[in-house]
Image 1: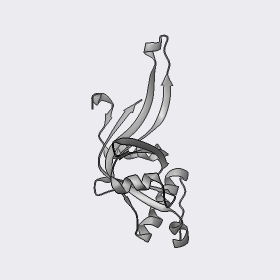
Image 2: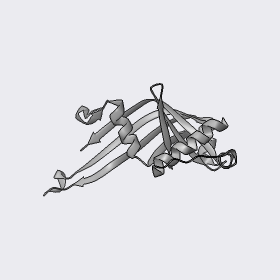
Image 3: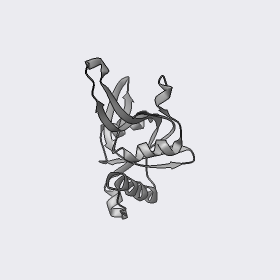
Length: 155
């Protein structure tokens, strides 16, 4: 990272940034073409890995691409604020962001799937929900497991 003064290394501070984000952009690669899709997400941090959970329809392009190439990149950001100045070159922007790489896979275990949906709802609403098998079976849930991610912030 070029701007070491903006790098966040403390995992608790990184997770605070993740807590504030509502949208994660997933970058997929299909035969040399990059496909980026914004998704809502939930997450867990376990065994030094960031696990992002997403849900969607039971079929579609992103699932086809992930099956062919499960290596993905991701980005999320929050805490946006324009810093104004007298001259155009003096303007700046405050932000906090996470960027990483991981492996995508479909969640097939029903208990993990229900837990993932609850995590997604907590991330989006701040509320706790529970899901039955019928509800969980109505969507596809996939996860991205990342051991490699960085965080950056400009206050």
